[in-house]
Length: 574
Ligand code: GLA
Image 1 (cartoon, helix red, strand yellow):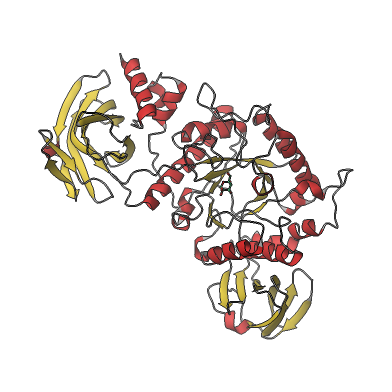
Image 2: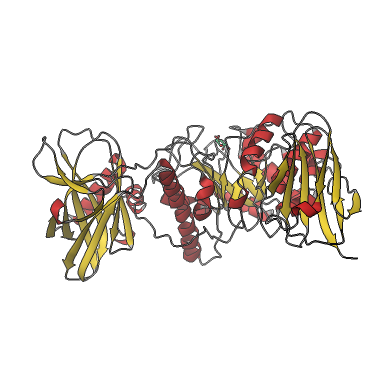
């Protein structure tokens, strides 16, 4: 009887969106249903940052999207990985080979697991990962925080746990989580008529009615004319809570909480259930199609011998809260999955660098650091100058949110793509380095190899992408994103403090004509984005030309149209 209850409720949960939580060990339902159920347990989050030990400097790698879009396959990816290993890119610090959208088949397998496209990745992902790891590189993968990806292929909303497990088992080390086909977690909460507590055999222990709850905020007991009886309402939008206290049980263990709901409003609803102030569970109810006014939802919870409390509310005041919650949930599953897989195999954990990609819609710079390792701040980049400048303009303002372990992501590089001139390619790369942005290449790096497999060392784009001085600015361990010190609309002056006590100063000419611009070094000293001391003079080195000079204060830069000058500045006393 018990097993069939679990099976039925788990399947119903998967089918209707009504989720319930139970301990994985006691469930013998099918893998998919069990996963759907297991995913509903909200893991307690205590860290202030995601803190998975990776991306202490901005991640560096390559992604298939900007050049290849839907047309990726195993042979191409292996060629790209070989090019990264042999062209000098790997030595320069690039390490991730990221499969973007379209690596997956349109159907999950019989266990509800992702499978790679049968035709383009015939061996699946794991052997590809092994081969790429052999080259000393890591593999990234992609899904969406929605029912489908941006190319309408299967995605991970509702499958967080099973997909995280799959990625961990494949040895994935970077995960980009997009926002297409997202279904926001509701900010509304179900209305609660009563809660029945039963033991695990289904025998009722006690029934608590709406009037028995302690209410806070806007929560209140209401009646309506359609149906007799009372219910608790006002639990949505994080403005009211209902708590049932004194739920006395005779032994520690698992118990069933069955809620009778009063259906109102034809939309999804969500409630967080907190037991004894710490264990968190959740329920989601579907828009009603039923004739009846009452519905039900269940959670399996752990109760302690003696008195227990159950608090019910919806913690989301806005869509932003809801998106943060969904991204956080996936991040926690990734951490759990890599830890559990390593424990199971007795191997070293491979943490997954978690890239949040909701295009800046829900101000992810405010919550991304707790949820993951990087967060897109804008819509998609394109390989033309107006796109680069527009993305820069949005991202440069977000400096204070970036730091080791959590970065603003102005999207993958378009260096070497589209209509960008050499100056524009250099400027784009420089700006991303100044902004401590992830350096994820988006061009076809196979062309950096000669036919005999050696590197084309004089390739102008390869020289940009492997400029050690620039990469050192991006990868500086202080992990500070540059601040725009001043702008006259046409030229911006950016300052980035570096861990060795020097500073990088960048003059960026967005304009279509050459411009001369000045900076007084004394003017930036003492600013919180500059750690240069007041000194007798300063040594300046331009990092693209190698030009060097000393100054006691002024730097005068001549900047060609759509280009940059970037100086590393060292204070000198004698
Ligand atoms: C979105 C993302 C892109 C890319 C595509 C794939 O547009 O922002 O970076 O991943 O989806 O479909």
